[in-house]
Image 1 (cartoon, rainbow, N blue to C red):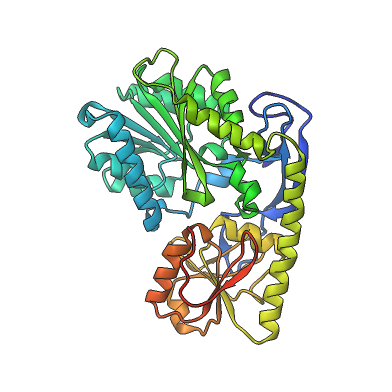
Image 2: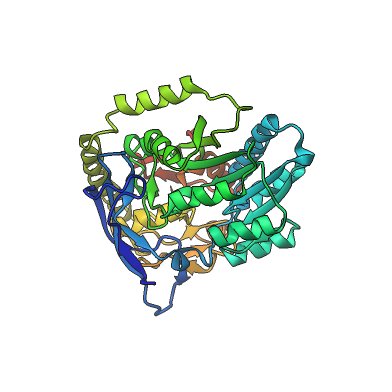
Length: 421
């Protein structure tokens, strides 16, 4: 397989005349970390987004081989206290739908290090994970959380059935946006799903991408940016029905989507909630191209404002570091052309990232000890979706500098603010 290909048509409805509305340039892979002093050649690919005018799905114009993206992965869900609490709530919600947890099986696709599986297991569910990153699958298996180290496809679905595992609940949190063949993904869920079961996905809501200027969530792993309307069209085409959608706070604002098979009569469709979300998207103008063109203009303006702010601080002799070596940081830094001469280092709590550097800009990633060993005047919160958690953590380390939030517009936070997550 070639390392990438250009998307020929919309992955949901097949429409071929997609409307490109933003290009962030030719950027490196956000989650491909390297040695800061390595001479290894970085991989660069175009990073641009197009809108399907028929079903209103936003999608990257280039698809990178998933083996390059996901065969090894540094991000661990369980590192974040925010995500631990989020998955506790999710598991509790599912247990209310299926109170007889002892007889209920849960399959989690892209289960990472088992953070969500652990919450289900704690409530008595029988669990199984699917995780293509072998390093993460190994961590989960060592914890007694059975995990198959494969991509989700027909072959893997058959392996699940061969184990006699027929789940009543299939979950896929923050992976569906990473999948090119979303229709095949659903078909393989249907192969294993109990007739009275449900399929739950969580994806960042494209309404937040546009309204809140969250352009740093655009990177090569995120192939699709979903609204409610294209999701309804997708599940309809694959013979499933969305029966509920709820907004959740993770990743800058996501939606949790609940779907069922047509013959499943035990679960009622929440029509009012679905209609309200679609109506809100329409009122916001998200079913037409002008809203996306204005978004592209805001992105360019934000880039200029961020560069001016950092340049002013550096001219004053201030030292700048960052917290959170998330993929978002890679997109923002590489799009703005910022390197270690401006942002000295980025702190991250994942041991697998420490000692590495981002591709492209080579900004080094280190542990929190660097904040004690180096004087830092300003700390850019690149993982801004975890703002509350990071401020509590750094102030607990006696960090007394100021914080910079890069989005939706760059601003300095003084004192002890109470920011939104």
